[in-house]
Image 1 (cartoon, rainbow, N blue to C red):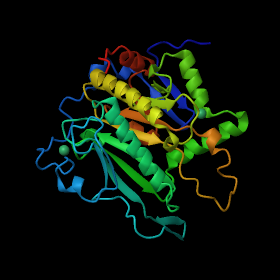
Image 2 (cartoon, helix red, strand yellow):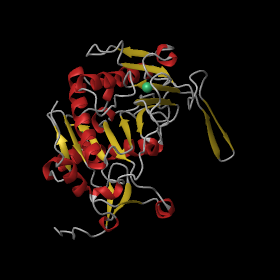
Image 3 (tube, rainbow, N blue to C red):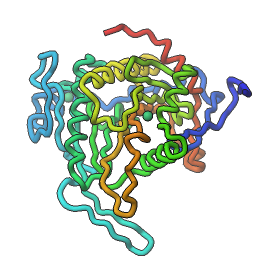
Image 4 (cartoon, rainbow, N blue to C red):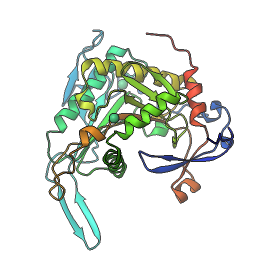
Length: 353
Ligand SMILES: [Zn+2]
Ligand SMILES: [Zn+2]
């Protein structure tokens, strides 16, 4: 095997997303290079006026889901409410038509906000394992409920932390969007994993995970249930994938014990990111098997989904920007070797909970 020079620029192929990333350590130095020069969070609202704090009107209004505080300090710990400014509206039917070459879908969907914590002082990364497990249970409950609606073809769960990651509110929250169409990158993942399974009768993600655990140079942390690693062809520095070690296609089938373990692993890796990059803005996306509405044109479309797809979470710190080269080519340039990012994150010392 050829051993590449440690500082050489490489093009790396991501077999899941089918994209190339350019890893160029020449362009990055120490992790401190990427720490934002100014505080990056939206301003913290006064607890009296923050719409998500436990005494506000919104958090007491139209509640879709609610969980008690396992530590009994607050009247509730997690709430799910409708988004006041939804991308899609819930009422109506999905209409599909075309104007000449152009296909149009007039969408309905759901757009909900998970209020992760009852006060502005508590961030998702720092709350106790028990409390964060309640947030994960809220994701599970909402996916199970939204999957019953046959109009929805994908349920996206994501978190924007910090202004540069798109957060408009300081208060820790997650967004849930049910969509009438499957996004392109999900379709790519579904078809690459199905192709891999058809050729090899193995799950692509299980194969990637096995290779990462064998090599271990990009593994950051793991327990008996989940592994967190920096993907080989990460398009952003310090990107992380968190994935169940046992094959599982659907997050919403996770047990309470599994979600407790996931809460511990997420807390661990987010705290490592926060210590390494001083509380960076980040995006968090949960990718799970979509609702399997029957396809009239391809009745066997979902036949192998339980074997070929594997749910996972991607956490992407937003510490670099796309500029002309990235837009012009579609290639990302990652200035930190994924192996170096993983080593930095592994070396962080955490105080065990
Ligand atoms: Zn608040
Ligand atoms: Zn798998």
